[in-house]
Image: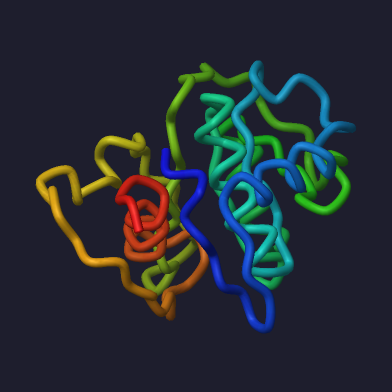
Length: 166
């Protein structure tokens, strides 16, 4: 990972390493995340990006969702899939108690848009989201991230910032 790459969020600029440290502090109260399938519930883009670098760095079975996309139906679907919802701000478990699930370290749950019904979880890995492996020389640039947090395109843009220098 390119932890020194900078991330611009609203009026602030920090690097991935600082986001990782912030997530580690916020999620310190979380119970054994490496033994559960987790979706981090985020309220801000900063929380979402911090959870991405935290999930990849710790090889968790994880994903992110914005608070406003949760509904009782979505929470029930996640619980049926064995997903534990965890507040990115506090590390506390939210929602329904999930069914037991097989944990796959390194699995990243990408959320569908939900346009044809309830959101679905699509499994990926850092490798399948990082479509930039063939990019050997890319001039430093600033990328705008207009996609829905947790969507495939969002993860791809985040992967660009995590895996490609500059």
